[in-house]
Length: 177
Image 1 (cartoon, helix red, strand yellow):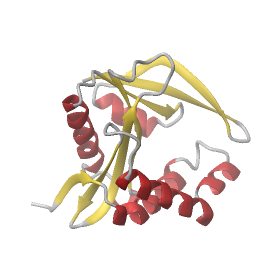
Image 2 (image 1 turned 120 degrees about the horizontal axis):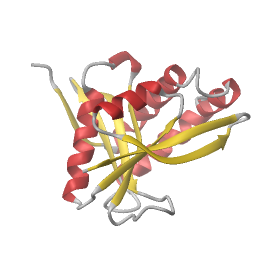
Image 3 (image 1 turned 180 degrees about the horizontal axis):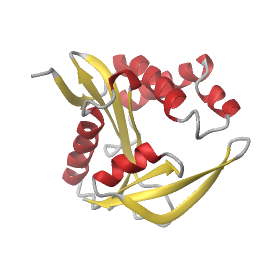
């Protein structure tokens, strides 16, 4: 059996998490985001900022309900997920959490790492007494929408538009825990 699992992130994981984020965004969002915006958020300068933010998230989260998890395979970080109390004005953060991000390194995709990250997040949130989990996804991100849909998620009708040099629409998905 393969040596795989999910664990809380450590400061030492921040560089790998940032590298995965950049690779996953470059591959997964290249047809969803304007090229200039994607280049900016995946630049070496941005990767440095991401690395610092993920290190902070690992060692000093804003609350006990803010968590950063990593998927590992043979001691190599291959994906990550972050969740936090929901911040949308129409949601109750005491009962609703947001899956802020869930990304798997494109070099390690289709191996169950995303499912393990999602399951571990759900387990922790259930322990916290959370009843609903939401996530924002790009409207055109059919990979993420199918992945979450296969786990019982559905759009809840909320939408937002980001100005990334061109309007980029996101939809909010939700599931009961």
